[in-house]
Image 1: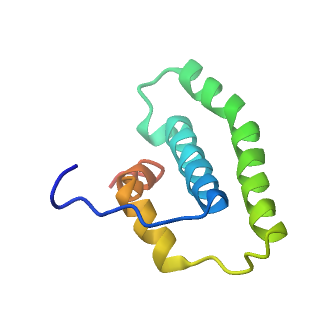
Image 2 (image 1 turned 90 degrees about the horizontal axis):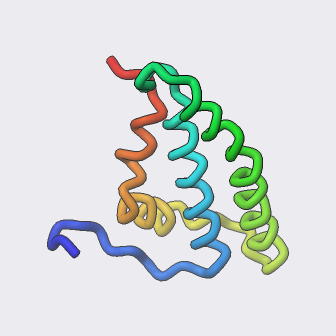
Length: 98
């Protein structure tokens, strides 16, 4: 691990699943993003086909959190986890470049 890399905080199993599936959706949306495409339809098609399953997994993670009584999303902790997992760079690929 790099010295300057943020550390992954302690998370519940449901929070881990939430973060993992959220980032999976971000990665898929980046692959669908026409502004960042290499000009081929097939990779976007494959990513779009995967979206419903990953979205369902994200919903399942959030429902599990709710069922366990986790009524709050700990923003600072989950933001730290997103940073540790390169979430800022990954989410940036969903935007339209300048």
